[in-house]
Length: 219
Image (cartoon, rainbow, N blue to C red; front, side, top):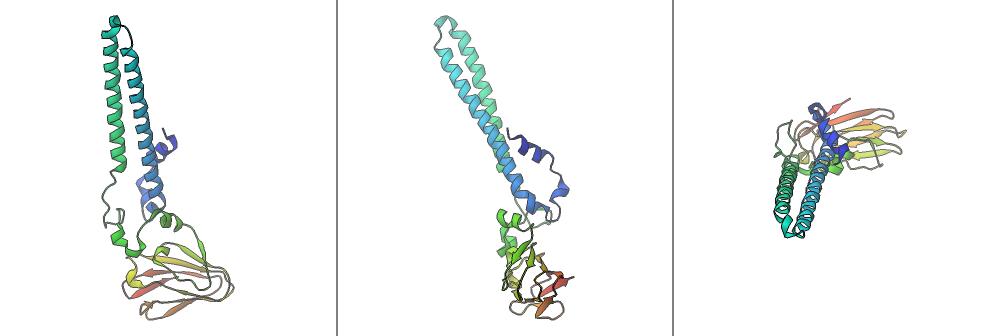
């Protein structure tokens, strides 16, 4: 039995999924559920194989002991059947992930997120800072990331705002020794009406999608 996986699931609390917590935990928890289900299935298979071996040995005994051997085999088969049923139920439970929806407390669907669709790799990557190059194109998959400008005179570009889901945001930190310029894409504005925003060395900001036309700057 995957004890570590069982304990992971047993100790999970709802507040750990609040906000964007699920992005870091969801994939690991699904893997834990699958691991526990697989262990149960493996135990059931071992029980079935043991029952089959016991039945074969019983059938090889003398006719005098046939009645007793048959009773023992029937008991073993019944136990193996129960174990198999339990294993199948565990596997079904592991696969029975609730249908995701659009409520903030539910797992978002890819269709809801569009080009920023949730996938395990990006969900885990998004929880940690990442350095970006001198001419970086910010993407929808940078949702929730902290992008760090490390060197050079930098110009970055925001993604098309119409391709971003509600709630999209990105955090930027400049430690390049120069000014970082962040340009809009297409006709979207930053703040009231700006086409670009500058970030001084040693400073940072957060840009969040407000609607299909505007990014809000959060200092």
